[in-house]
Image (cartoon, rainbow, N blue to C red; front, side, top):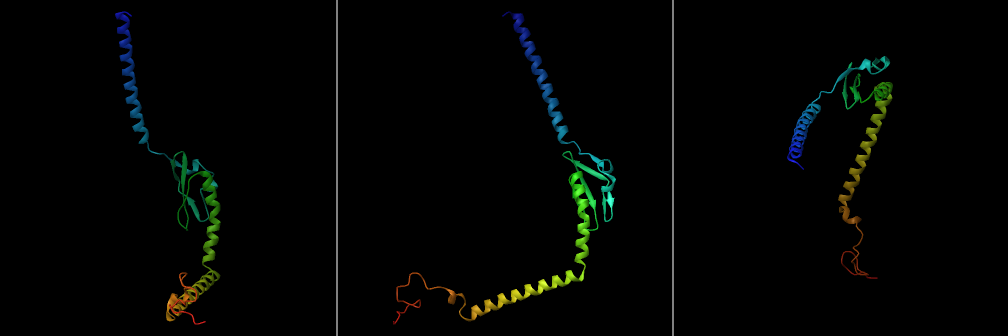
Length: 166
């Protein structure tokens, strides 16, 4: 190999190294720019049908955040805010609103109040029974009376330590 070939080879190597470091710097700059990119906000009207944007007892907030290619809708209802992580889930949440209305109406009726009071009365009676049984156990020497004789007792020996007479 001649000196000329060696010099050309060194020059080519130096050029490749320089290109590689420039490309590496550009790629590093891209990576830092890509991680700091702001996720977009789109209009809900551009993403879903108008029927899903509002109705009785609900309204979809017009600005929709996009996270990881999925639109995140915020639904304002009298029962509190709801979220839907896609257009398909928005349709599901909107279809659930009549059920929320029915639950709200049912919770305000006399039948619901009566059933709740009855359940509370039964729970109170059960607690009173537990307390009564616990106090009865304490008055007759508590759980000690409920224990079986120890397995190490000698045949014919009572658990109190005295021998049986018969």
